[in-house]
Image (cartoon, rainbow, N blue to C red; front, side, top):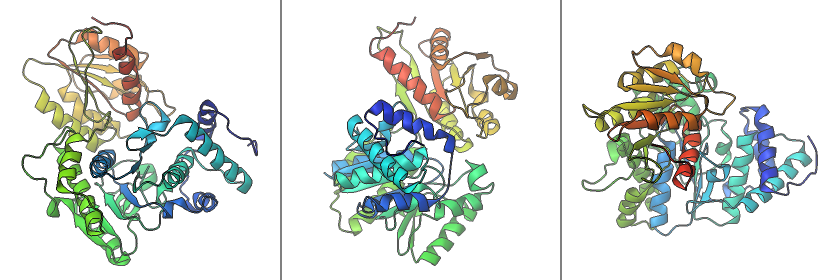
Length: 428
């Protein structure tokens, strides 16, 4: 490592972050805690809502941010991964952190790391930057999403969040979190703090047993969204899919806890926030102008584990009719349970186009094809833009083009579709 070298530009900041990829995942709160001490522990100076869970974390974050903004609160939002640009991960009032501010904070954190001879990972650096930025900008509330698990996730350096949320617990990242629901639940339950409040949508008995036990140890209160929270009939939820009602309930449960703590958040703000919440790349309908191609329905969804793929499959069933076809663009990471993912989505597809997202963890499309047992025509393309072009050619106006398998896949696709929408090449 080159010591005492300042980062002078956004591009240099990106290159520095990318150089940290080799460090991989390192579960250890001590290193980031030592770094944050040098910034006066911003994680403990910012009011935090801490979010963990297998699926739905980002959607709950989006609901919360929308509600709090509707209530007039200056709201910070830290999520991962990003779809197009890394600055998406750190937002205030749903506006990405400015590139110059981002580079400056990356540089400041790097200087401290170098002086302490500490190497933080990509995610740890960004987490530190988020806490420092939100404290500096005096946000009223910071919504902080865990990256993986909870116990030793870098975000868990916060000592006393306003409220914590565990959306659900299912199988994902089993090589790090454990291969049983009980083990995974223990990792996520570790975000529960002494005398805190935890809101959850988890329903499995073995998961609830873990959460209840942790609450007893920490003298914390458990709120079950499925038991205690209901969304009034007639309220609109912009995010699509029946599972979003559960995510909305989690968000409303967290808001109720803030209200108990004295935050002024009206029912009108809650209703308006649920109706306006938007989370790109999650059951997102992307429409291209007629100048680019004939009318198409393009569905983007970053489902990247069996539970997420099941939710996507259920939504697709509501969209397809007898005459429409599903043109599926699918790219997945090799450390995912892609056999089960394929099992949920394959029976619905009429045409499959396999791709390899730009990631060292990406699974070869040729290997995916060997696992594709359904009697469906399967093509392999060299890139996601080529896959989209092929999907547009093979589809008709009434068909559903769906791009899924990984947030990396959806991020690349969304970037390309935005280019098309803004005046890129045309398609028939």
